[in-house]
Length: 196
Length: 136
Image 1 (cartoon, each protein chain N blue to C red):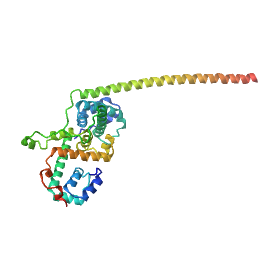
Image 2 (image 1 turned 135 degrees about the vertical axis):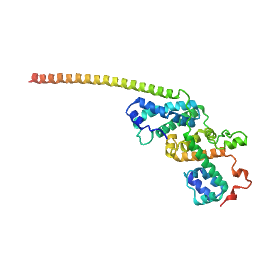
Image 3 (image 1 turned 180 degrees about the horizontal axis):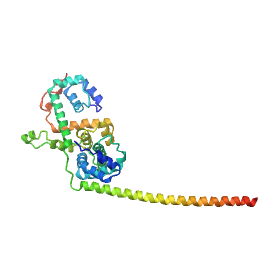
Image 4 (image 1 turned 180 degrees about the vertical axis):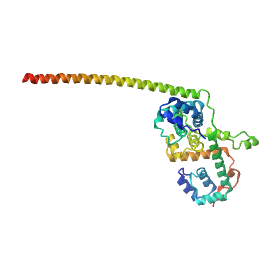
């Protein structure tokens, strides 16, 4: 459960700079985690955090307080991350297509190891990291940080419908990576066998 | 396979097969999309689709748990943020100081101009009066 930051938010909004510093200190590790998950790079996450907290500091008078400070910060961090990833992709001219193949993150061929790690958090986190940025962003914001579709669409600058389509693809891609042996891949019969 | 959820659902309903149902499962797993009764009935009676749905549920559960994992930021990240804020604060203060001085300067100029104008007007009025007197 996040700490109650209400007092610090009120003080910071009243112009207490040290209160804002305390807010930063209380939340920056969480925001760093989100920024890292969205950008996939430590240096990028560091840059995103500097932008995000500066934007928050300047926008603090507009923060209405009807949402938690951390939720507000998640949205700002997501927005800054999306901007950062977009700029980087444009600069490098190598934006990954959604159909780009991703690395196989399954543990090596040891069946025991594989069974033990079958649903390890680290394994899933690595699989998420390997997703193309556009798919990664929606699954991180929706399925890890529980942001509503509307907020995700707003912060990523896409339509709500597009956010849902990307989420659908991302979940499917992850499932295929993490559970590669689907029943229908081992069966010889065709899929119509189960038609109602 | 259509990307629009409603269209996808209609497409799946036309051919209720494992392949078609599999296309719906990523949206159905958390209730984001509603599965039609026929689709639900297929899932209830199909072990393959049940297994796939269970995989999605497991995936979502682990993803949700990742929320509590917090990465340790590299040393210097916090200091960097605070220094950036400090610098922005100083620049802001400098800007407001300069804009304050500019406002004071412009205010002074305006007051001086107004004063000069008023003095000129008094002179003119008094000259006018004098003129009136002279004319009279």
